Image (cartoon, rainbow, N blue to C red; front, side, top):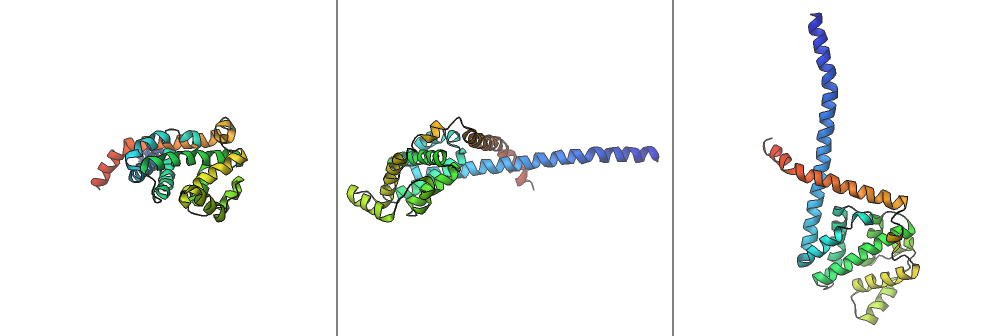
Amino acid sequence: GGTGTKMADGIRSAAVPAMAALGALAGGAMIAAGAASDLEQSTGALQSVFGPATADMQRAAEAANSLGLSTADYNQNAAVMGSLLRSTGSDAATAAGQTETLMGAAADMAAQFGGSTTDAVGAVSAALRGSYEVLDNYGVKMTAADVAAHAAATGLSTTEAAAALLQDRLADTGALGAAEREMDTYASQTEQAKAAMTDATAAIGEALLPALADVADHL
């Protein structure tokens, strides 16, 4: 009886860390699968918005980590910006070029004035929608009247005028090119490392998705 009890206790003792390890593996697999799913959905959004210019945007997204963004975050935010630009009548190629420029500008804003690239991208997208106040956080003062005057002078749509005027105002602040200048700083490298880790997690998840789907089919 004593031997059996000791054996049972030993099995239970070994089982606890083993189950914990399995749980951690399962949790990690789900996180990886979620990252892969996010990447897949963001790629679909990119294709939907940019159509024939999708390949151009995917090439631009290869530099996402250097901007402090995961590929999924770059794709998703680029799709939002591109959708706003295309809604004004811009063709896919033009919208792709403008979007790539604006994504780079957002990284410059974050590098120059602080905060994450994701927050700066949100500020740029807000400006394209007509909300300019948040740009104050990045040293840029723009009003609806300014944008309307620029649109009237150039013949651009309001959205296109906001994008062009933002570039002009950022040039005045000296922010353009800041992301490249600050690339070796601790803050920038931390953002880049986080983004690269997210991409690595998504790559693992892509490899796991078929197996996880097969398991789900048999549940």
